[in-house]
Amino acid sequence: QKEVEQDPGPLSVPEGAIVSLNCTYSNSAFQYFMWYRQYSRKGPELLMYTYSSGNKEDGRFTAQVDKSSKYISLFIRDSQPSDSATYLCAMISSGSARQLTFGSGTQLTVLP
Amino acid sequence: DSGVTQTPKHLITATGQRVTLRCSPRSGDLSVYWYQQSLDQGLQFLIQYYNGEERAKGNILERFSAQQFPDLHSELNLSSLELGDSALYFCASSVNGQETQYFGPGTRLLVL
Image (cartoon, each protein chain N blue to C red):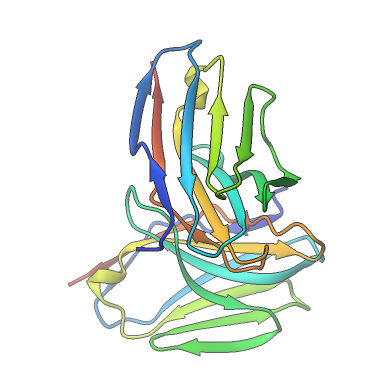
């Protein structure tokens, strides 16, 4: 079993829809949670970073963490065609090392 | 633009050969991370350096090695290349090994 599970999609939605992307994890040591966006053949771009359980909002993006359920989500409101990309959840465990453990990524297409 | 630079962008080589990938972190960042992204394995952590010293190792093959130089740039050396080493190699950097990592554009390696 992978430490981080993410539905690979693909996910296709109409412009303006609310998108929900999710990851589950099994390692209780994960303390820091990120969402990255990756356009085709480009480097991952950091979208959101959260530490505690709860919600964090940044513009059209909301990151949600539920440590008790080992479940994180990213919501995109009023989705745009420019949001079409692969979304990767990533996590860091407590300790001195800070390497990211990634989910497999969800490919999102927003149709105009 | 994340501020992390990687060269070369593309590399085509033959099995058994050796290549060197180069990364320059964002100004002020002391930590450099190397990741490999392949279709079947996703994004996987290889190795981390902090201010010239190796900090953590992930699933890095013995044929691969890295170093970080006094000017903080890093090089990833891949030797005795195999077809399965074909992948995207990303470098990321962070301040003082903190959680938020910023990725470079990657080097696409094709081993023929």
